[in-house]
Length: 357
Ligand code: PMV
Image 1 (tube, helix red, strand yellow):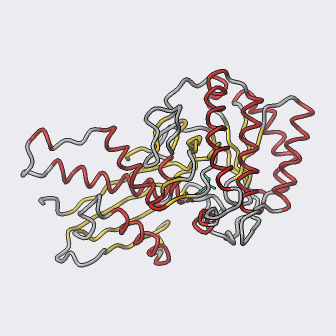
Image 2 (cartoon, rainbow, N blue to C red):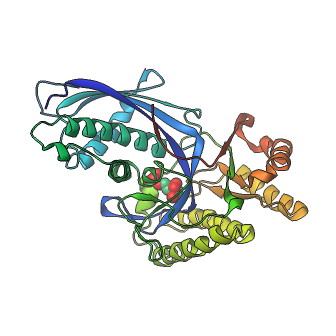
């Protein structure tokens, strides 16, 4: 092929699941469908430079985070390359330089795997696209990769890097995993939520409270695997299907009370699965519970539609409608920030997906 070298840059956001993905089958097939809000300012920017090398014996790449060489990221990328090589046969033909940076502080406990893997998958798809476009052995009509296919395949590849990464390419709501009521939904890639969304959810806010920035004691890979043979796994997968069905009506009619019930229950159920696996583990910290209780008290006292959700960690995502920004931000500053490590938090909101720069 004629493409000797070049570089592509993509920026891709993080996402926060409303119905959680927890438990998977082989090949990163989720145990249940999930849905997430795409975030806006929490994102990763990746520059992927590539140059043709003499042999095709093995992968060759260097990876940098904020300018520092990160050899400890190599095994994860190597695993990713092995999984996707059948879909991107050029991986051994080039030397890659992967330069990545996050808008959120690293080791903040915010998972950079979703934004990082989706940004890398998109950069790789840009190479694939330029290879196809410049391949003179193809007919002119075949030298064209349409945008929908591009995003779908990038999401498919991102899933093989980190499951939840397949939900980070588009916005504002993304579904991953086959669900009977959602046409086009797939276990293999994320799709934009295809139905009506009430104006109550427009510009929905997510303030991420950084409760614990330490390394997780249990990785999400280990956590997913503990769903195999978990006593509640099958019931949990069914519940996720039901919760996603209920959310379809909620997004249509704007019923924020039902929304709160589903989202908070999903967060606690995720952690309940961790606490009831064997071995069991707890990722919440005392301050996680302090924050949850403060949110409940505030909601009762004010009729606010504030609620929380959690990832696989101690941090709390505080979700609320845009119309409540002022009062909720005051509450966060006055009552919740004391529970954050070094008082750190990030104001984010619903976003619209990845961008090529
Ligand atoms: O993408 P992974 O394998 O790191 O799994 C993350 C799963 C949760 O963040 C806990 C839930 C979700 O659906 O994002």
